[in-house]
Length: 264
Image (tube, rainbow, N blue to C red):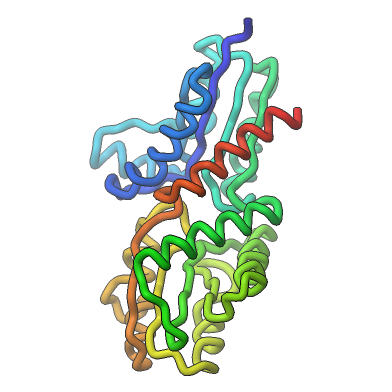
């Protein structure tokens, strides 16, 4: 019987608290669901890996190193599941590293990122809306802005599809904005100001509640989303919880891994 392994690939985060609640929670779920496979992990951000090693003295491999270790361990059947939200630059980088080492393994299954098919958007939208509702009693004069990472990659269109999904569900007061893609926050502010909201809820649509959520979104820095909105007279509520903390999101990653094996 072939030796089987599972590799969970994440961008990573330098914040240990959110890492434990999000990335490691997803890893635990997949490790449990695929208990017949030896578990491996990798982070794609070299900066994050370097900071973790320096501050916490924890060595987390990148994809290349993790695959080399699997090869050395005699793994022949490989299941790889990323925890990326979209199939953007980090996902492409992962695929490139896998392709370079494909010959080492007999079979390789690669799961899709969080948002791939229409049903993924619906599941993810429902999950984060339920989380928002658990924390805030919405009224008609309140709006929600979900912060996505964004990308120059063509996969950035996923955020427009997510926005459309919320609207199809009847949530006209929900907006999706991004830090490094489109729509930019200025565009979202323009849309918000066309309505008479008095309170804006800010929440990350990211696997972890890390640097972007804590600094770009919720900090007291003058250019944070929270500060900019408050300077315009809005009240703000910041919910600092990463998608990886939500059970439905973790289960969706499991389904993607399962589907990858079934499609082979």
